[in-house]
Length: 187
Length: 286
Length: 151
Image 1: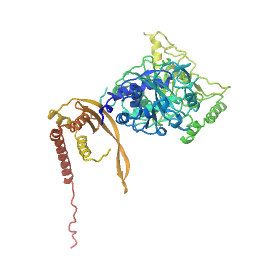
Image 2: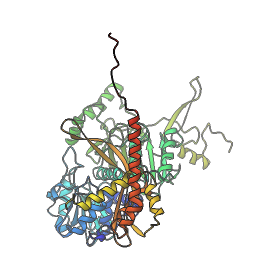
Image 3: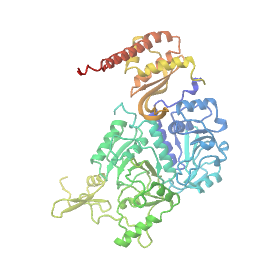
């Protein structure tokens, strides 16, 4: 086994995952806010932020879907060792990771059901650009309006329309992340 | 801090499970996310839900405040503060403005919270429809279908019987026009404060539910056009600090019917008195 | 990956031996042997719980017995070998010692580790088992019937 795939986990899991969770929670509770995270060094090409989110939220109870460009032996091993999460297809995953184009179409992912809308997938979108400029956002967590660079608009409008069902998105870029829950209206 | 426990008592896998539930709860404001509540070293009804949410949220840099009915110095608040001092080694405070996480039982602090703060509620019965419909399968369907007629009938029956809506605490609210939510047994006086800058997390340990409100989420107390919601409180100033705008506890002082009204938020009252405010019964020894 | 190879079997045996060792014993033997190799953590010692499963009933159907506290650790020696350790209870030092022994068993020092650490551990274990079996044997009752005086 290549030892590179075993390195790069949290050195102090309890405290680093607590700090990372606070950053993710803060980003999800305030769509448009960009947070920096650190502590994980996943194998390329996974971004540091996506690696941190994986280590913080994934474990044997959360199946993960890797899009084709990320479905590499090194990443499978890294996730297997550090998170213990099974790698599955798009239709059964709790978390999906990949660039936007490879995550499409979104209707492959679990959207939850009307009695249990929480049983839906969270998508980690790897983006080359992340800034608090672009599409206008409105909804819970936003006092008036916020802005966030999004890969497109229509898909997120459609996602918000099926509320309380739908997907939640975490955008990762380098060591930074932002989030867009299903409750956010993209204008 | 004791080294025998994992940071903040819970093991990492449990914390991950709770954290995922918190994130889903924030994404669907007002919806109760089921979670696998753990046995905690305190009895149900003593805030096991709030404690688990706090444990999953806490970082070593936090300053934790715990209040029970607004007071920092009651048994429940003191023991939970001690618990986290020992298992997480965090700094504990009583000042509302200095705290980064506030765990509360049945009150929202009087001082407005900022956007870097988190308010964690201890919730006994998370289901607002439970007293109207005991079956979980049915209440779940009612939430799914947005079928809240029963709740309005209940409030209407209050008006028919008492002339006004008699619910004074745990007053049901509607979140973002979708889910009817139990705000935990806070006095209805506190309901309008729920549209705030801080993140609000609700944990029900025995009932195994977590729900949440992101900052500035629309929270509307249920009412009727001709019987609008009234966040009333006792019509008195605080006997110690003279505050007119704070929620008051009634304290019986003798067996002759003597009583006084004092702020339920002890930190608010103490801060006001330290700033020179005096109520009619304050001892002016200072 | 085949799980039941002879190498895996041997590794399972020594990991089991380390997991059953009493508190502090593996670290003590390691120190006595004068071994303190350099390593870095892949997963620092962490405490968690595992679900124990048992079998019961005529068909041996599995059931969840309960959760047990375990401590685990993974590390890599400076020479590159990776070791894992799992022990019962909240014992960070023991989990680390177990991982160290596991890693060293994959190096040229395997024979020395076997002699200085693993053999004493199995001998301990054997002694413990014999002592326990001896204690249990003392409580054995031989049932027999006295003459019932029917003459």
